[in-house]
Image 1 (cartoon, rainbow, N blue to C red):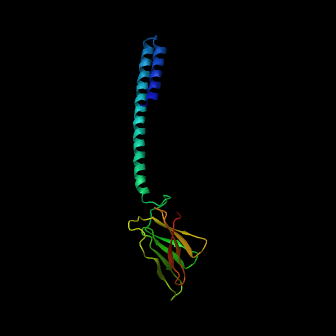
Image 2 (image 1 turned 90 degrees about the vertical axis):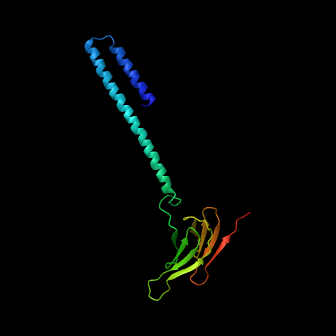
Image 3 (image 1 turned 60 degrees about the horizontal axis):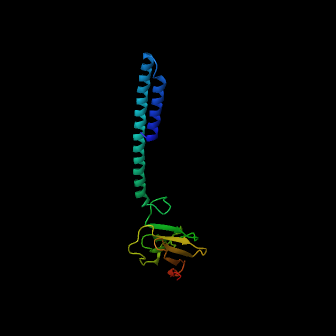
Length: 178
């Protein structure tokens, strides 16, 4: 039982005992009955306290488990991180496919017409971090529909990514200012 509750129970017991101390045998029986009820109340309070302690321990255990799950989620904690992410472009028939672990990038084209080009065109086949982790690299669109920024979330390195419907795909590092 918590010290504050135990003290309150003891004070209440002392008050009841003091008020009924000069009474008859019938009053003594009532005092004994009250003391039994107080003992029961104290036992229930103690049991509740132990249950609360177990609940706190359980909550801490759940928190530790969530911390493990958090390692498998994106920065916003919304879902598991996929190694490969598709990014929509403003071109209806083109997506960009990013390997979020290595920084490798492809332009993916599709069509609903028979005979039109469907395929992946490499934009960057160079591994940008040999020891990368899923979710390390992310693409951000710019105002230019053909240009994205590729960012390494661990160190802030940034590249300009250009996709094209012709042969103008490229990736260029953006130098850090001194």
